[in-house]
Image 1 (cartoon, rainbow, N blue to C red):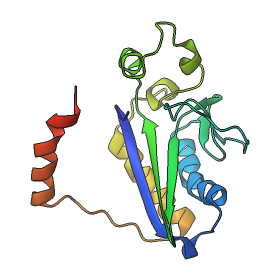
Image 2: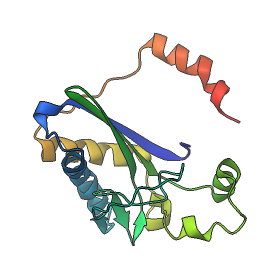
Image 3: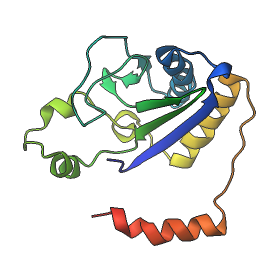
Length: 172
């Protein structure tokens, strides 16, 4: 479920990184850690563990090199590899609507376990954050940490039309 969050994707040829999924997570987490530090947070990288979560809720467990603030997960990410390329997708909750989460995931009224494990920028930040400010900071940090040029592309008119056509299909 993706709701009230900033979602990012990073795609690359593996030869520019490493064949290790875990090490690639570590490399791509550093710009995010730096971004959160610039926002005044105290992020830490999750430790590598051998525990495999069986939960459909990707935020339930902290995986290796995922980011936590105050011992709660603040970035959820997944990586897909195919031949010599990979795509890493991640989400950063701006806020969490616990009632919606309980309904979508069929959680008990007492969803304390998740509240003890997951956080959002709204919960952790003393300041109201404009998501576009976070995007700007993240782009700067990815550019700096990975020594690459970042380019911003807008949706085409055709892409915007498709987004508008399908946007109502997946909202309930």
